Image 1 (spheres, rainbow, N blue to C red):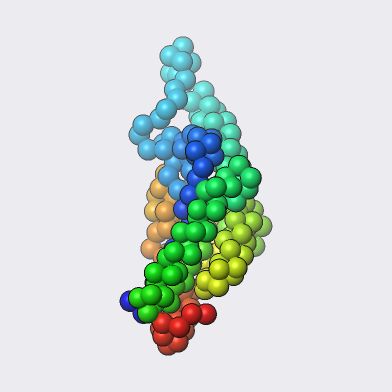
Image 2: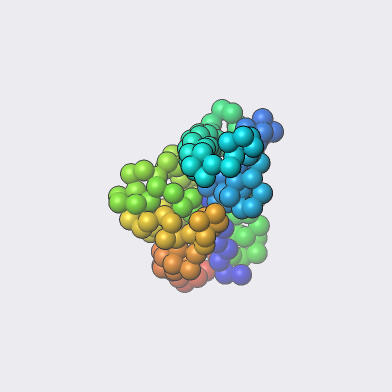
Length: 195
């Protein structure tokens, strides 16, 4: 290939065993496993019959799980996942080396999780992770592009495949492709040389 583009999302970090164990994977902000037909919690029968009780319980549970999930993601480059972060940087370096050896340019495209993008994106909780990955790429002389600006201002749910599957849909992929086009075109024009 002339260009290798690696789409890096915040769920692509390597993880130390202790850090991985902290995630219950009920809602990893990519798939809401609690609502995919196999919930891991249920209300006791004496109250589970009540639609209102179920609704309130789900809202409380979702808020707690989402807060815990955000904290867990934010720790990907922190001291609780030091080894995982080091391995992630090593993975990026090896991919870059393999691409160069094949005569291709390697580009890391940092994709956001599709949450908190509305308005000016001020509620997006993982800017720090994007910055950490960008800095690591710079330190390793790896070309990279942060795709968060391409998605800011859109309702996050308008970019999801489904309310419980928060992978990018056709609109999100279109926005991502438009943002990547000049980077990939420049890389192709420049050939297999590094940045």
